[in-house]
Image 1 (tube, rainbow, N blue to C red):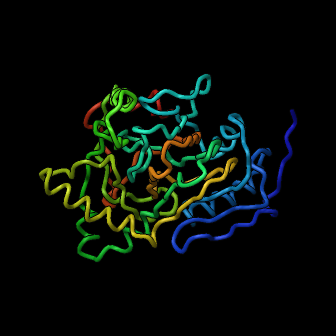
Image 2 (cartoon, rainbow, N blue to C red):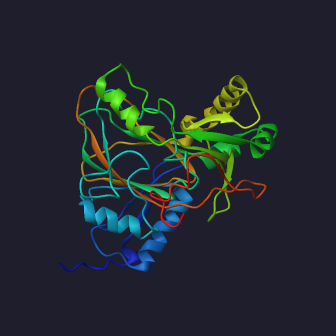
Length: 304
């Protein structure tokens, strides 16, 4: 089937949050987008960190094609199975007991976390089920100078070996999900402040997978990480995406965190995620992330 090339001139980028988020209209992501259009979208992504495209109704192949315009795709996840027959698509189903209701940046427990993530809404509950996305560069700028200087000097160990999904109650499904999630264990030291490879902005690179600060005790680590994380999740730094079926959200995984509130009871919620392979994070001193346990996740991130 032939596709239609759509020029960039039709795009409308409308800011929807004070510090994060824009909604883009006038573009059909099912089309074969030209380079000029992608340039506009990428520039908007760097500026706004998270982009919302309403009513796109993409299928699997169209989501894969759109995501691949930003670089090589990862496989679905280092440990969690993909959609059947689609090794690059992760199903994000809101099964009770395994919901990811914790602030995080995708897959930071490996050395090269994703560059960007795309989420496509297929089934949306009648209430709740939103996605919150936070601007970690704005959070870094909010820090008082002494805290900024401290954060610049720190590394944190990120790992998948903890209760990521925060189950509300014990269940066989939750136990099985956790078993799969940690079936291959990773620990990676990342800079607490990451320098964005395209914009040069500094952002707090922490979130739920960051479990310990290098050189500090567990208690000290929790206190420091909680303090810094509180700046990330300030309301002014957060965009709330209210989904409708067919929507697609694109966010920069290098400089955001996100959270899916568990507030929709036993209703169904199904999204599909495709992520683009990223680089090894770099801190303000120019040093790069280091593997502590596990491997380079080459099965997940192409070229690593």
